[in-house]
Image (tube, rainbow, N blue to C red; front, side):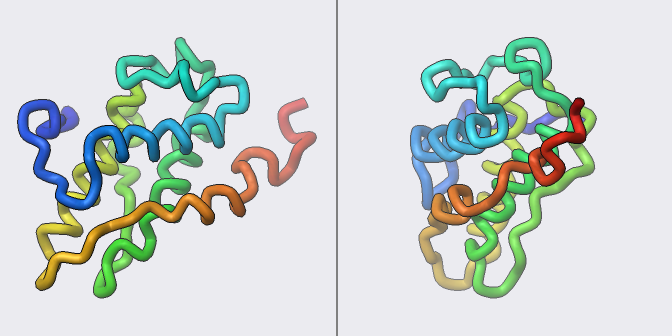
Length: 137
């Protein structure tokens, strides 16, 4: 199953602009991947080949996004799907996943409430993979 990437032709998300959502992705990528500079994060970048990330890094980024948007809906818990984990190759794929999650939340709102990312959560959270700092040796 391919990613929908509906946002390329028609931006439907009301809470965040393309640039705002991309900024969230930049923050998440650079939080997990210390060696990647914010200016170097591009949608078309290959996570493994360009940034030397692995599956743990990709899972961590999805978990960060889930945490950042956990209060997006007063009635449902924000869950970032992991069933497409093996298909995530590009930064764009992570962008697409969170776009679809947020769009789904907005579509279920009885009264529209703007969804805002919680950057404080990202700052407070310990980098995943560093819980046991000597494990990569």
